[in-house]
Image (tube, rainbow, N blue to C red; front, side, top):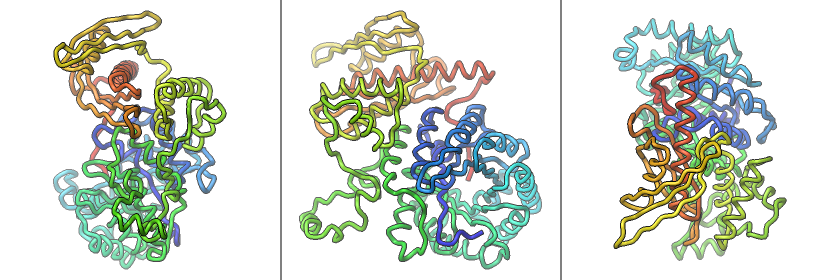
Length: 538
């Protein structure tokens, strides 16, 4: 089933990307990322690992129902929604139930095939692995027509055994066969030869799509993926910003722009709406709290910056002297002033839509009110400011127990930092004060005194949303209960022109997220789960 010159983009940001430490997302955040992936035009969204937890099952099912029926993107049709599962009947049935609401559902099942995995993890013989793989594909085919099979750690699998497994699962009905470099071990020429070996030795190889999923442990995920395309692979599994376990995955934006910019070399392309790449990258970065490095290819802040004099001279004469693609082709607009305190609702709504946000009802009103507050404090309001405000409105939970009302902080070289905080809880107002090592620590201590249930901050990140001394600050932190560290880890985010206020908002957001998670666990009868479920999979 070779797709000719079309390379299928299989995005696993919501599954493999979320497995990166600190990158867990709430259901609301996953749905927003899913909508943006659909607008971007990815062919397949791997939404999660349904058997891993009730929460993961529910999020995959929600994405299948809502995103899997959206007629959007360049092709005006919904993406395929995939659920990952081991080659066990219970896993497969659970994945099938989760993806069922999608118009185009896919079951993605796998088993490890390398000697080290067979002997030390699975304790299975070659024959047992082949039997398990074939049975998994056949069982999955009883639920859906679209079945993908992955040979976990294929990069370290004996080539003769790899050929045997690939041939067997295609005969069993697999429509896509994935050859993952699970630990980022392969080199480009070696990996290319491995894919070529499949086409030369599996008679029915062209009756399925040969896929690749490369990890970036040696910094070669994109290079290996593209080398495989040259040998006939027609699906690439990747993530936004290269998120993923350990050193991450192949970066979707780098894959797409390589294929598009060098179509003369690869002879194939994707259907991705590349002008949505920057918006997608920014959304995922802000949702996960993982900053994009300035010199990151395609979407980094310096990707289209030219400082050297000789470069600037060439750019002034002809941009193609130093730019092989335009900023506009990936949706990068710079930081042009777009709005001010006199801007009205209509202009504000239109600008948000251009940035990929469609807010309605209370979400829009909350965002517009915050915009006016910020516009009164900031001289210039940039696109990134608007994005931060839109995400704050979208991801605020309307059922939050604790609501931020007010804070003040005092600090100096000769006084102990002190903070006063006022919160409301179900209509009742609580105020308290505390001292700390600094104003942020004092604010956190005051909140702990009010709630009588202190948190432990595991990670704290602060960044300016835009440039300038009046820039809004974004705080992202990860917390757990101080009296039960490690059981649950959740993230909180806050945005404000005052960084201490942003820290207070982030802390309260994390407190509410932890409350919601614990209530959900109590309802489900779960006693030892977390928003972050590490899974060693392809």
